[in-house]
Length: 101
Length: 236
Image 1 (spheres, rainbow over the protein chains, first blue to last red):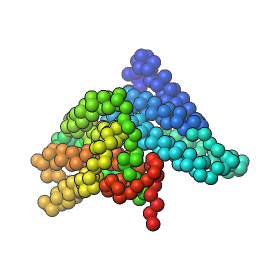
Image 2: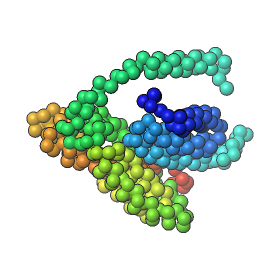
Image 3: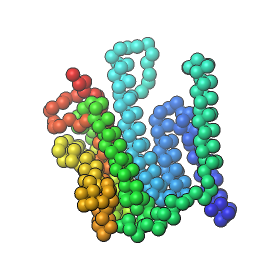
Image 4: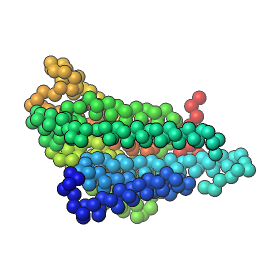
């Protein structure tokens, strides 16, 4: 496969791979959880594109639907619940270590 | 922050793991695709013409059966966390979301059906169709209150387990007919795979939806009352 790749394919694949690595680093190092989830969804969509480039359309479909869509929604709802539990904890105990939510 | 030695050990372990992965990839044979020829040699007997579906549903059907079982176990795990009163989970849907849903939902249903049907000869199949169905269900959960509160207990459980029941039923049926486990009769393979995939699609869709709820849905209105969103009910 490698010898048949043209420069235009490289022009597409190389930035895609670099952006994927960059997104992965950003989402793992982000301290803002909401931002991390949004980056994760973006990562999933671009990863689906990468699967298409690897001629794995089945996996691309699953990645876009489950990796980006359903998992993203799950993370967002988990985040919402975490925040509301945290708020309850803060309201109830009045600790000195408060967290803005 | 962790103390310094612990951090160092974690970093070293991670580096070792990365090295192991790199070694595993480098030690793969470049043209180790002997299975490819086997799959394409036998694809005529599998009942489908898409090699991925042939492997997933026929040649390695046992693995797929186990995968569906894992999804089912995930639901049991989430349900053991506690009960959730679905109407509490919902927020009033905006006009825009409702209008979008009217267009999106039929399209998603159609896409799921197409992916299921196309799986026999093109990329697609039960997992992809189920994922789209699950996405549609999650959208519905986010918007339509009346739908969610009318989910009945037994239909929900039937749908959740349909994939495993049909899959293992066909597998055992092929044993009863004199074959081995999951060895479909050759002439029936195509239709049997479609039946299994249909049941699995429904199960996967409902499973993803139920996982999104994040707890065991309470049976009907009034059995459990909770004050705020997503609060767990303490089991006593």
